Image (cartoon, rainbow, N blue to C red; front, side, top):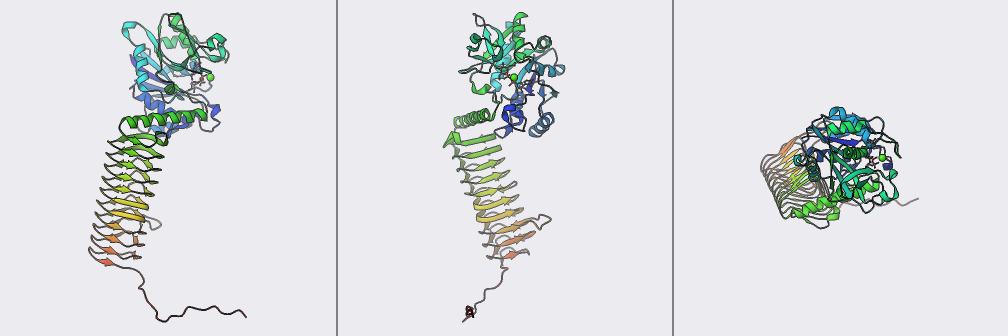
Length: 466
Ligand code: UD1
Ligand code: CA
């Protein structure tokens, strides 16, 4: 059966006490709803529909930005008034076709795994078993707040009763409704049309369709979620932090199982995609964002932030370095306290030391900038040495200009290279020089006041007060 996914995201999230709509609250740097959409798209559905309400336009706009070009959402259905989960699904019905299976997900349950959803879909669409709908449940130590799963003595699911409508005996049931279900659309349409809101909350409960399925002889195929963690819903900042911690644990676990050495799995944040080679080592309090690739034997020191970078084999990033949209060549050493800004491209064996900033520049193989330097909009040749305190003055206050530093060139300490300018291969710039004209290959350029010595010079003495 063709698969359509409906994501419920209209809830207000009052308990967040935030101006940001709940489904836009960030988990691992990405809106909650984007996590759900990203998982949903891996199921390759025919269509995907998001039911939105609170912060409507903002939710759509933010998601369009986050999910960029390959926006997988087929339609956005507005639920102007939040009259319940059943009413929410109704808003997406016009976009669904009768020959489809609808998978209902929640925008505030971000860790649900594609594998679990696949199992649920499979159990609902086993042709040998006849017509069925799938229901994802969870065994809870404390089921407070959840709808309870009512089963008959044979273990067949009969209905769901919401906490507020449940008797004491029903409240003692520990099997809760996750909210996730897979329902053939032609039945869903019929059942939703029959919902009534005569219940404790005066809402149209999606959960009421379970009893309808049973009454209509449509099999309800329950699947108990393998872990509680993956179906955790988020209502407040406390739960947001708990789910963030769970996400952190999961990512750390994946990395360790892939062979990465983590000094402390609880002190690593992966906010995006991290691809790793063999024998990678990561020290504490490192944050990865966007898409980062680490080659074999890469070592990352403590307190580094690395966003959208490629780091080749045997490179070493030392403590407190911040790298963004950069590439680091094999065997290179960066930091401590280095900053690579967008467009920094370091070839193999480059050394970047403390308080060095590189932006939109290529550093050739074996080139070095070991202390206190700024290299912007430049090409630096192989083995060139950027002295301590060298500044590439790339910006004239209006425009940026390019600087070329040839292979094996050396710039002295505290020199300023005023762009556009070319330092030839093997040339040397004397310490303290302000270079405004090209330097020929192999030449020494010195551009500073000559040192003079005045023999017998007398220091002024203090005039005595009258
Ligand atoms: C719901 C389930 C409950 C389940 C629990 C799991 C119903 C009636 N109850 O309860 O059985 O154990 O989730 O967390 O389905 N939403 C809308 N529009 C609405 C109402 C809700 O889009 O009018 C969305 C919310 O944004 C959220 C989801 O539906 O993503 C669940 O809503 P919520 O109010 O949190 O559900 P509960 O009452 O907790
Ligand atoms: Ca509710």
